[in-house]
Image 1 (tube, one colour):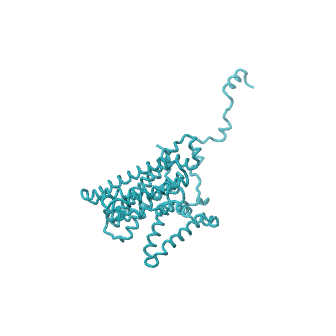
Image 2 (cartoon, one colour):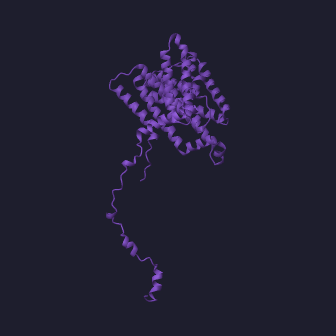
Image 3 (tube, helix red, strand yellow):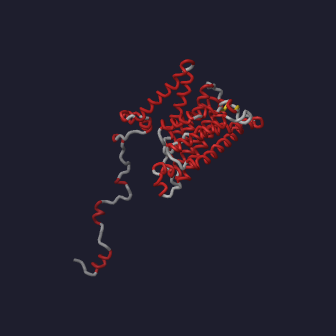
Length: 379
């Protein structure tokens, strides 16, 4: 049986996130106490990673600009939170309630993705961005204007808060599931069809690719994981308010994807964790009168990062000291001719070796020539 060569680069994100999850889980399970603010930060980072990776499927790999990701997250948060609130009395605030809410919230977000995707994906560029942006604002407005008995109205929907000691573990398990689904999709024939549409839609259509089908598939898959992130958000907060899922939040998710690199899953993960960490720490440090500086410093940090990633003058520095180059130096040894060893096999003991005199003495006359010369006698 032939096995494919193990490519560490394909699994490095699983390894890092898996090790982090196991270490923190062991600390929590063995009685170690992690700071409550750290646990909440881990939950927010996991939610941001799911959002960034799922949006990268549409923006980075499909090549379409979508600004409605916060809208799909809003649907998942409200629907999942409502289901959890209804099941809390009968099933309690445990894992069964969480899983049911996750399935319902992600499923409803997927249905919304199909409904919006069928007409919207016929558009491209700015027009698609406007339609998805309008969808997000409509969803936010609908939930904001509901009655207090249904989805809480302007005050928000009260939702059960999952135990902080375990929610971040579940959240990072969902991150691993998201990575597994998205990365395997991208590396499959369906993912190659999606990237072909991004590179040249006319050529992809001419080669027999069902463009509408694959656009809708990628869009629906992205909306599903946005809904799952919304359910996670509802379980990490006591109240779900529609004001959270506005235009600015969709832009923030898009910044994570762009900052990490278009079509780079690992880049989206790093950017999501970095931006979430910056937002949380700036909000914690800059309080009172200094709170007005939060958005200013956040914008300046993003500008510096974007300039570093794209400035032509810094290209040689990036190529020399980028994370990928440093990683290759750690896991790969340069070829040193001094350490090269010759083949240990000795030609004088190889069984198939033929002596030079035997090679020279071999009769190379064709058989038919031998038959003809046999009748002619010896010279």
